[in-house]
Image (cartoon, rainbow, N blue to C red; front, side, top):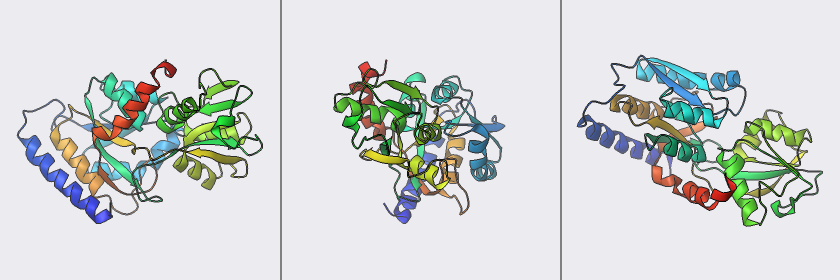
Length: 296
């Protein structure tokens, strides 16, 4: 979808959103009642790094919303899901799998608002990858076995756990039983560093995180190779609680639709944002269902 077409779609969505929601009865957390908007970020890097990366976006949102925006980073993915469930945050950047888990945890009291279109790929979808150390002798996921160690990002991570685990399961490898050791590093960068330093033989992560880690010098590309790349995964949705007022949601849509040059989110550089739909994550729900016995 071209940038112009995405913008036209967003304008259409904004119009429908505003007209439709203005007819609803008042809901909790109206624009007049809210003094600050609380945003939750998943822990991919150190909290101060994540918050700093989101600084230009925070300033942009404060300008459009006309209120203070408080950004916080969860200690893990579950912490952000629980914060949404307990209404300790209003908005969260979630991965596809953590969105599905949050939808269950909140009993449907969240909705995806927008999803970023990545500058490098020109699309909102992204890809999970399974990587291995170049000196491991592993060239395909099916070559992982009981003598190998592997790192995943977080049990609620899409690209850093669910999708690579599903690929292993398709190959007859039980991600809970068929490795020498499995660790959860707490984030994509930490997971990649574990491979880079030789702590583990391989990891499940995603292509944007790998490219970013190499570009920043966090890992040496000589030490890591991709042994499998997934089909496209639906992009990570900016998610909002349903009981937040329509005025706030409308302003958020407006803010993300009209992002000027130089404004980046903690996810990195985006060329723009497009509407996110709950149905796009049915594929993740399907994988979760197929992996039910492996996710206990």
